[in-house]
Length: 178
Image (tube, rainbow, N blue to C red; front, side):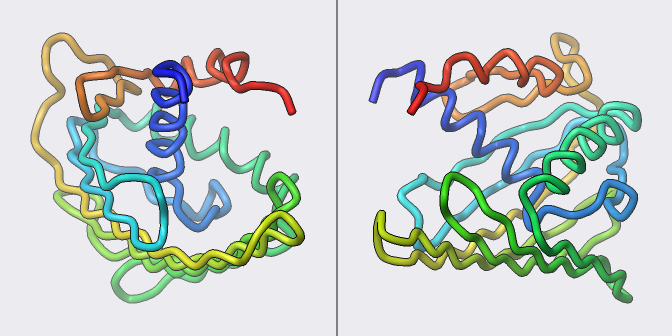
């Protein structure tokens, strides 16, 4: 795998980590503005664990939520989000690249200082391979104001690779065609 493709994959993982268990935009909470650290631990997946930082503000968080929602409506046959006493629970069934992915996510926290997302998913890959079960846990904590060289939407990946969520559309051209 080339370095560019690996970087792209890690960037996509960062985006996926922000939106576990695809939910409707109006149901997603908006995080406190500032710098968030997110530790992502995956089990049953070849994607390595990672810690990233995300600079956000209210507008950027709402924009991210709204950009994910139309895609989810296209690829997901089920999107159920329930508010709980401590956060949200989301159940989804989505189809991506010939795979059916069923996920259940529990989101707990106040979105002002810390939150935790625990997601379990089952991917039925059809004839292309055996099913895969994965669990992802994201522990996010608010660190304070964004750093002086950061702007809302910046995600700093392991190794210092920086991606702004507003530029994510540009990365689609780097994905190899089938």
